Image (cartoon, rainbow, N blue to C red; front, side, top):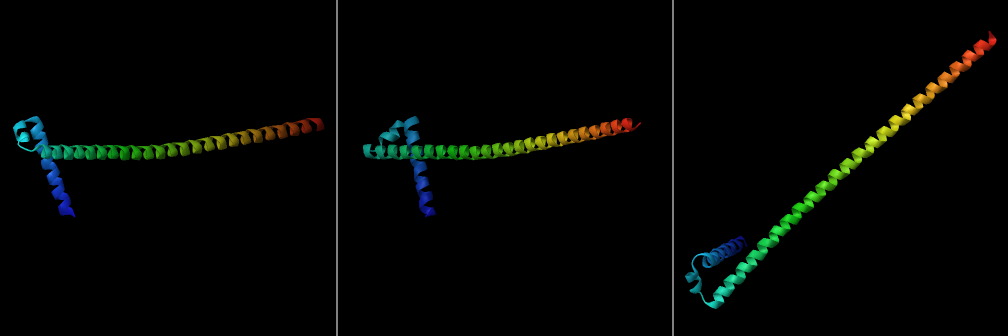
Length: 121
């Protein structure tokens, strides 16, 4: 199978080089082929270009998909970090409120004690 693929690849490369040479440099070489051979060469070149373009598009879409997945993961991590931060702030606020409430209770107890002490004196 590999031998067939490498032979096909070699033929495609030769055809590509032949056609580009014909089109760019030496049109006389191109005219030495029959119309049918030129059509076949042009068709193969077109198929080669389409496959190459398809592969490039596929590679780009794969890289975009990977980037999208990576971005989703980053956003998820940021969201989790934000949630942890919000939770920590909420706990901090609750603790601060509780400390303030405890201080107020202690202050009111002290006032009551001082009022009781002054009422007995």
